[in-house]
Amino acid sequence: MTTEPPLPENYTLLDGHPSVPEYLNLRAVSGLTPKTPAQGTAAVSNSWYGCYITHTDPETQNVTAVAMGRIISDGGWYFHIADMAVLPEHQRKGLGGVVLKKLLAYIKANAPDGEPYINLLADAPGRGLYFKNGFVDAAPTSVGMVYRG
Ligand SMILES: CC(C)(COP(=O)(O)OP(=O)(O)OC[C@H]1O[C@@H](n2cnc3c(N)ncnc32)[C@H](O)[C@@H]1OP(=O)(O)O)[C@@H](O)C(=O)NCCC(=O)NCCS
Picture 1: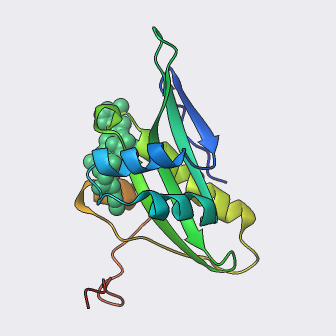
Picture 2: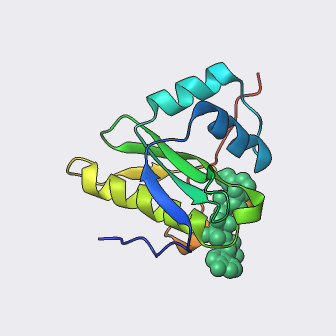
């Protein structure tokens, strides 16, 4: 059973997804391609599972979503991890690792009997994190492809 490492002070891990504006902000500010409000609304509504981390400013008590990840899945055997994103000023504190471990633990706890197929398309900033958490290159058996037609 995977357990998540502890979070630094003032951070909270939650099940679910940030609000649509926070989701769009997390993607854009962390350097992922920006999405429209309609795309964001569908994304946060239709994922199989997601989790996110908020930061509470100790002075103002303002709460901001600063990290997230989600799983697109049939709920049977195919689990695709997407939207791994941490706001730049909160990166390299272990938040991405906490999110990824939580997603993997949720799959292990909730997938039906049988080996789950868990994949993702790894952009360069996440590769070290993914290798450390049990992912390997799919190539040469499989190569990720993107439709540009
Ligand atoms: C990829 C991403 C989600 C990782 O989030 P993160 O919170 O920085 O991840 P972590 O802090 O858990 O781990 C990142 C690195 O910091 C290191 N780290 C963890 N805690 C640390 C700490 N307290 N101090 C210093 N470094 C630390 C980890 O060992 C890891 O090193 P590695 O990349 O060499 O393996 C984040 O960089 C990001 O949002 N990038 C832009 C968007 C993106 O490319 N997303 C991936 C799409 S596939």
